[in-house]
Image (tube, rainbow, N blue to C red):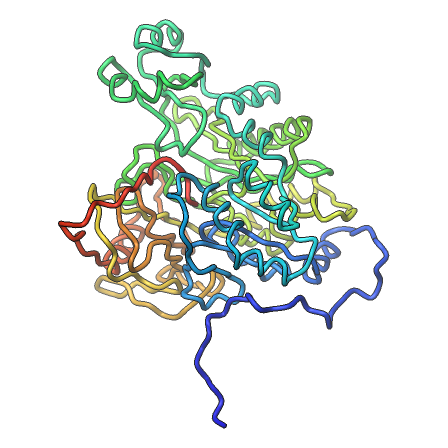
Length: 509
């Protein structure tokens, strides 16, 4: 009989945990340093799941952690990623948040079967989750490997972030917190801050919940969002550059990653002024003094989080004042973030261990020793920081159509004379060795709707995508044009009702 050589989708839906490679001793032992920690995860026997819309944020972590599975609603790899499970679509209510997507996945019968097949004691990681997520995890026998949703939500509140920073001695841009119910009330509240103001509400993507107000006409544009908020943060407007830094609050102290630049508000990438659209990590990000102050601020903030009972992963956004050189706290994201793949796949992480491993250790029920001061010193050393950049490419046109063709995820190459070409499939950036090549992760595929603000995909390449003046490089623009050229869409059928889309109110990545 001729064997069937048809390639089946490479999900681990029917896989069973490995039984041929179990630790000889069942006696609990203390993990003594990084070598033990790496070995522990390479021989991990507990199922660990990253449940999210896509695998983007923790790409490559299945190569560090055995028994690691991505459970996603979007199949960026067309069934060919060995550790991505995408359940078949079933009817559901419209998604209004990433929490809705996660709860849909956890409620899916195929996910329940997968979790049951892979055994008890599993841990679940998320970008966002709520009390319903926690309930669904308990019903599946999973532990949420994050602090409780109520605590995470408290820390995520931009007003509370400011207060935490104040207690930790980490300064924010000059600001006032309070209720604003009219333009007159705003001017009275913000009198010490000058005429040019920035107003933020408590939650949401900073590009969509940050409002620039210099006069009453500006205020009227955003009055509904500002007045409906129980409290807002009103800041003095400064000339600044954005920076980001990921860290992890552990029992041994706060581990701090390197400072990254942020790509913000580029119209080639996002329709939102102030909207995050990428990152760069490189040894010379800002000057040594700014990097040191940001690291110190992150450590102090993490220690205050520990005092609140928070443990694990968090990210801080900083604003670097171009006039004074001050480093101000922007906001805190108490979770894995859109910058996490930059942190966890960097050279310093490969030399020691990815940051997410230290996060997981807080939930694995194992004792470990770790010299946090020594680790932080190595991760601050420019010699240990390689240079990478990522672009988050959104659909920027103010229209809706349906995608008829989309580029596959994998390795792509710039073509001399213009354009790009597909080189081969790949699951993350590991084989990208040259600056004329990049890894592309597709988010929106054929059959999906394109609408203003929809994520098309993420592109990652060695080197920088901005120059020293924080403008996009020609190489970055060539990649953006090249990826966009690989998409095609068709207008919606005129007699069909326009789809009910409300994509601007929650973060997908």
